[in-house]
Image 1 (cartoon, one colour):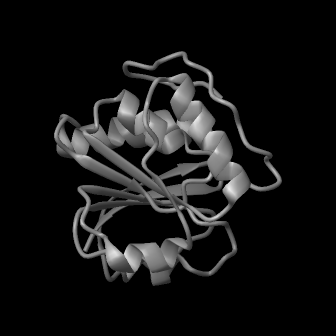
Image 2: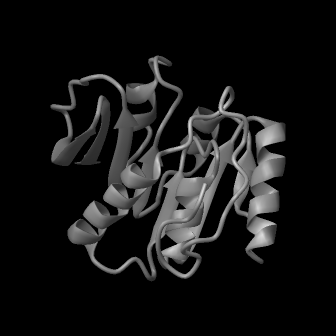
Image 3: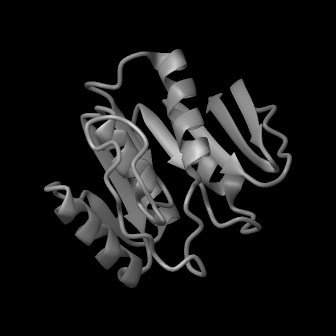
Length: 168
């Protein structure tokens, strides 16, 4: 995988086994950050939480584009090791917490941007959404969801993969 924009544009990162993670495609990443920029403007001084960090590419894209604080949650120690290597290769200190995303999110949910891309078919979309108190929520999902409880800012469809931008 390659970082698509910002100060680390073009830098390659090691992708974890795709049987374990489902890395967000580059065109989706570009669309997410372009849309986010149109919603909030500059990223400097803003915080970004990747609730299900998986490959870690969304956090690295956020750092590359200027977010001041980026944090990720990861439950798989093998994946965490790969992410730490990717951060190290870019001379960055990883801010990735090992543990269950839902439990960690209960302790801290105060970020400007919260990116949620749980394992598809996990059925935990709303469990996660209910734990977030503020900020822009970016939800990646593979099915139509009833998001009527939220302020839907924008929704994009990338060939059966949906990205919804929400506020509570």
